[in-house]
Length: 483
Image 1 (tube, one colour):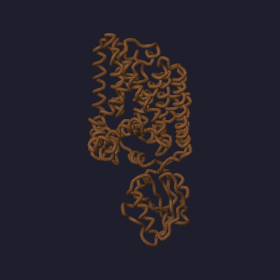
Image 2 (cartoon, rainbow, N blue to C red):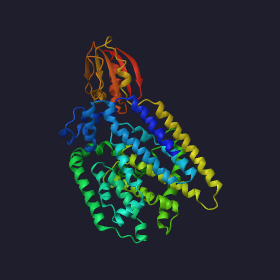
Image 3 (tube, one colour):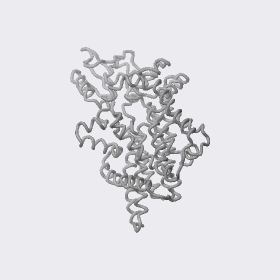
Image 4 (cartoon, rainbow, N blue to C red):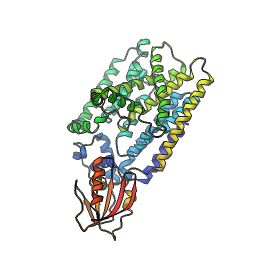
């Protein structure tokens, strides 16, 4: 069932990838740097103040140079990362489920409901890349770390483990959490002595990775940090607690349960939240145990690493102002919330004297989450990609007007559209600008999430003598207007 869930996720995103919708706003900001990329433009402050791993961007730029500036070319690496990460995601949950059918079904239901993950599946952003790398340390067994860091075998593997620190912004958090989770209790209990040369080599490689990413990324990102913090201020824990304790607690609730949206959200959270609390208790109590079952031994310390990772991200939200809203910036923690949920289910399943009652309760939980996940999955498949220009471009008829007026909030998306537009005159409007009287124009708009964009569009509509909506969809529209 977990492999089926992964296959369904990949199939849904493959369908969207095949449709090749235009770049939505955040993607377009990155695509602008790939229109005519050079080494100088990549290893420098990016256009539109974007944060994007430069070596990853260089790889995408290489594909762009080989195959041209096409939508499928720019999205192929993010999509391949999505496929790889989805398979790793499923494999981890399979390991956690073991031979318990109900735990496997619960994991499949949770994975199928990873709507935010699907939403990023084909997007020209770094999040599928980050999730893929963040899963690697958790796919490695405890025996791997024991052989390398205690036994001193295969020292080169320690170097390989550190290489992604030069590539991904979030990988170091995942690596440190996995290492701490592995060494948290078993190392002290069993009297392990770390192999100092290997540990030194790992530390040196991680340091070199940080130095590398500083020169390629962070020195430029720091210049735009104020803009970044202003944009994400509603997701920064310290800022929210400064507004009040209740505001901070709401953000923490969003971090844990904001992944579940829709009509069934309250019911789903009522099921998942207790399981996650029981999962935390299960992980902490297992850390104090003096022995472990064969199944726990096979799973190892991964759950402790998950708990440390979640705690680390929350602390980063306070100490270094890392945004922790449920969404694209925290996608790499979603699987760890699912692992805690499965841990809570395992706790209930193994309660003494519970028996069939516990299984019945868990199957009820699985049914509720499956219903929610199936609804969200079907909605994703049916819905069109947001802010998609492709259907609009085909409706523009030059015999009715040779001028296309691009709304000021949509300029970057039209500029990064790879194909020729069907009209000769394209006017990229500026703020508070409207067509001159006597003009008949095609008017295209996207990105109506901001108040300014909606107000500006209403102003244009009020100034028009006639306004014929040709097509309107999810965050985009086309009108033929006379001014």
